[in-house]
Length: 167
Image 1 (cartoon, helix red, strand yellow):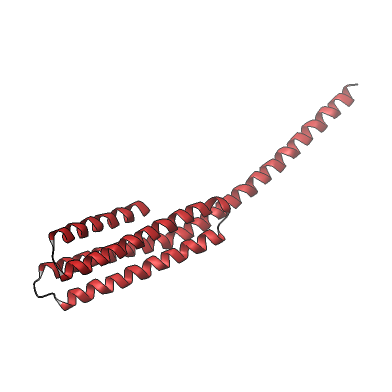
Image 2 (cartoon, rainbow, N blue to C red; image 1 turned 135 degrees about the vertical axis):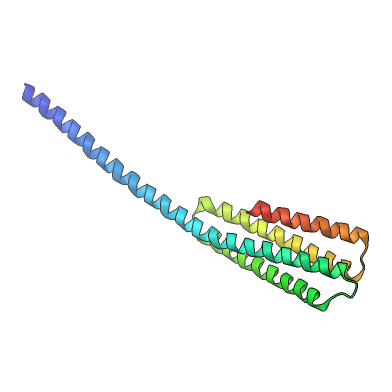
């Protein structure tokens, strides 16, 4: 009688151990999938961070050049050239970042697509603010009205805040 009972208990314990082993293997497999998704997302965000750093640098250079243009009475051509080249670089970097995010939400799994869409929207807002800054700068260069200068300063701070928020 004890032989049958011990055989049943041993069989049950063996099945439980086997199921535990299967559960551990399945958990390990799922963790490796999550790990690969995290790596994929981080690889996608690294170029975005680098691009955002470039945008921040170019915007600082652009603001510095604009300040030189507004302070100098002779409207230095080199400062103007630096200002407009920074504008081109910023637009190029924003377009590059938007392409990365578009690729991200077309390739990424569903849960992370929302993050890429949010980052894409942030870059679109940044682009719009930069276009407004550029228009204000054109107006300020031609006529140095205190109202225009205040708007320009406000737009510069707004862009800087958007860059900081995107980081």
